[in-house]
Length: 173
Image (cartoon, rainbow, N blue to C red; front, side, top):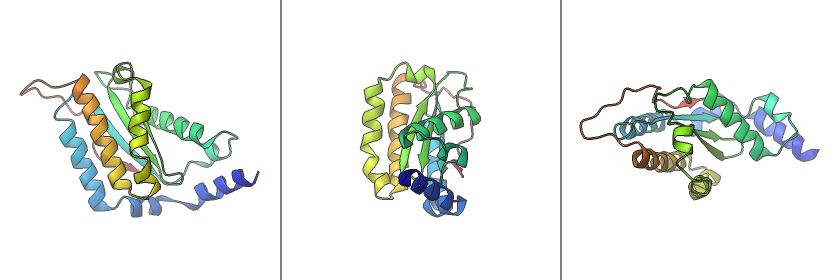
């Protein structure tokens, strides 16, 4: 009961100003530029979403935090229409500041080609960055790893261009 109450307070306490402090304008620009550069080498689409705390409807659920974070990432994957790309190879990188947790949700085009243990290993490598509050470093590491997977499975041939189907600027909420 006490841990559930602590979780509620933690998520309600944080707001957008905390997100903007963690991801300042210069970091936001660097992340946007990195997404743009990445998408020049493959046909995938990458979205980054950083959120201070879970909406109250999630926090009130009696579920493990890891489950709630995954469910929120899946909901945002749908809300942002990351699934709606021509190659079914969109990827959402979701960071929840209140828990310092990251989730990566890939559409079936990429997810079917990447083993679960690869996704888990990728998430484990950036765990220390988020635990230490190094959000830009962790997000850049996630972006680099996702870009490598997209480039491996969906490369663009020399001179080939792919239309930008989704915005490159990270969403801060």
